[in-house]
Image 1 (cartoon, rainbow, N blue to C red):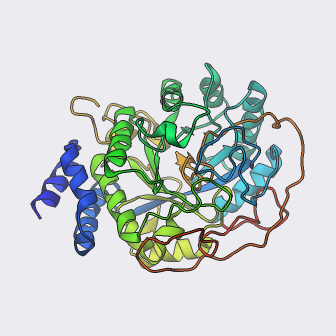
Image 2 (image 1 turned 90 degrees about the horizontal axis):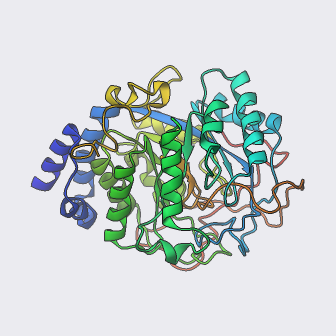
Image 3 (image 1 turned 90 degrees about the vertical axis):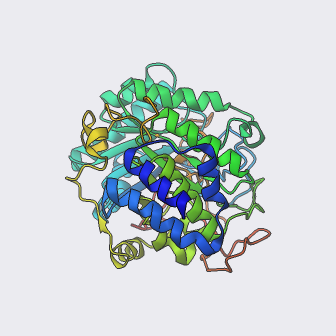
Length: 429
């Protein structure tokens, strides 16, 4: 297919595809999906070999968020029966992180629900970063705390943070349909603040919220322009009790095409499969490793993920290898000025703009690549209080379904997290 040959050539040169070429990837048929994966896989292997970076989420504060992001189980007014608790203490967060690091993760993503951190919250997270790094010298730490005020990114950097995640989530044109309590421009500003402070920027998107192909292209091209080192791709987890509970618009093949398009547009950037891979890719997850070079290990913020051992088995069975703590994730031209995390050194951004031109996860599409909440992460009006985790429902287990989009609320495909951070139960890592 001439289109795919052209895209491979451009990806190996870090040249930006045209919008029409990117749209054509999303428009390919299911019959061609293996050809699309094979082509994008050449670009992935050229820049990242067969390495898979493992990241581990620690939800420092769950629920209690004053923002109204429609996709988020932690949003204002959410009826999703998730765990709710205020800030973990540094030693609690460090113990939670240790489980993921023992499972092979090299980056810990510290996420907190809310609009953005107060200065006291930045102090809390700074203490947590120190606690984690005192026990694990080589670990990368990414913070995801929501909208940043002036000077806060610099303080996190001084405390030892390596990266900052804040996702754009969707296109500027449709952002107001998803969230009304902050703007798309607010998100862009926070990513720029992270860049300016010398943090490795991590910013991504959520697919499956009813957006058009053009919206997906818009947000990915905007991400390339922002030049993050990592781009988390979330697939909406339609939590019961949220406005998007019945938005089941994705098939495994659609998810693969989206990941391939992101790889072609951002060829030399850490593309991370974030929240929703188990729900929407299901048995096709191993194919996605040919497109993305990074995943989350174990559970997400408010939903359960695939068992950590199953993640490791999947990587090995697919012929890939876990990236070691001593290996640099990014290609040399991007990592030259940023050490282990990369940093956007002199190599151009998400592929290098024609002429020059974020860690993310909210289980459903925001945050440190894995939206669970996906919205703004940070403090809320209740952030200074202490509370006990609450649990009111029984966990459900994920199961496979047909390749056509599913309809209605599907509790059989979404398991609410009931273990790990904020509980007395062992984490999944």
